[in-house]
Length: 620
Image (cartoon, rainbow, N blue to C red):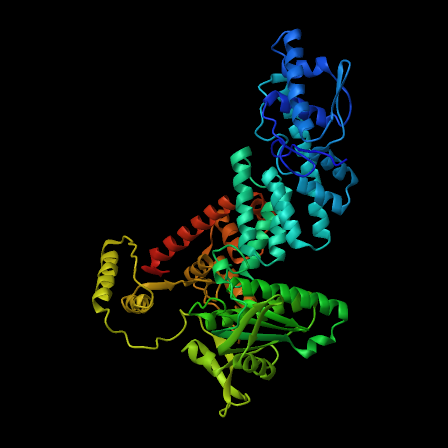
């Protein structure tokens, strides 16, 4: 005979074999039935049940109340064709009935991946969640059972998480980790696992957010900071964002995938896009298969992170070649700039990989822009159109370690590219060859020469000049906010003010914060600190920071400034300069808030000492 079912996780639900709910509203009747169900067929003395639920009554009244509760449970079940409440003498037994808690414990004991997944699915909430029997003895027993089963559930999900991680099932592992933290947000090891999983997917913004959630939970509940291992993981994330991505964080939606509103339809749509094609140079094939495979895997992970950070999408990965599209499904207005930043960071990341592998690893990168036909299917995004072919030809004609761009990309960034027209692409059906430009240097916005005469903002410029004059005469600083709609000339006004300030003897520092990260020199704070130290950025042919030369110049500047030890440790941390063992240990012991305060004190010191010599203008 088919059995009735009693679900106790997340509440109380009694159902017939057909799944129809069986009404049982009496609170004490539910309590008795739940207790008998968890006894798993073992007979329970009537006196024990009466004392459990009616301890405040005398013995006769308690036994009478028990009879009424058992009668209500028996009647409800028998009306559903289930004769399972069995009384024999002074004992009561619950016959054959399916109970989710019993199945859960059986699956937990089996501990196979399938049974662990089933156990996790069965645990829909605490035992009899929200239920109170108004009986102290029963409620005390219930509290103990809840905690015991909660512990079993935590162990089940921890083992399931470990299995998914080992199997490389990232999405399932994230789901398990998220459930674990919903049950116990103080499991710091699970926070770390989730951070690593997000990093594996290239979702750096979510990884950083998870660290902040971990830190907040520990501070709120325990009044403690994260463990050193968690802080080390956080610092490694920050370094990874500064180094391989060159200061380009993920979008503020917090995910590496586009928001729902940005998903392109399955039907092909015509979009303007910038296409980037990159491939490892054939000379890299000289590596042994295993090191080459490892380097390629790491480079691809790096490329995925870069694409995510600049809101681009990888459309295919074939052998050592990959294609990234920018402007689909969402156009940002600066997609050519995003693509050039990505190209430079791809070269820089591969250079670091080559150094660590002690091998020659170079990439060729080609960029083109124009109309493409984009569609999303089960296999991902597909692109067709002229720019795909032009980008491929540009990549093939590029020298190892270089970037080649089409004429449209070159024209989209006036004054930003130092480049030479060295080749042409040919497309079927297009009469004129398409010029291809070899990029020697990609200039930041702050480095590019002015392209247009400054007109129409003389009144605002006069106001700014008055503010500067007032500061020079009074010796006190001022903060000015320039607000306005996009495209009305705020940047040009700021540029002109910088030029005017320099003409009047002020020393000017300009820091760019783009909508997909900082300028080409890294995060804004580091850029400003470097400018205050008097160290100019040095760039290679692809616009990536020449780290070794710049690092040496920074080291010399720090020595010349003769900063105090308390400030020097934060300066070296900011610029990733070598630290003594004692300084490294002191930094590792600090939480993120302490590091931030130290960096702020350093900036105040640099600005104060610099302004004591000469008036300063800082434009962000």
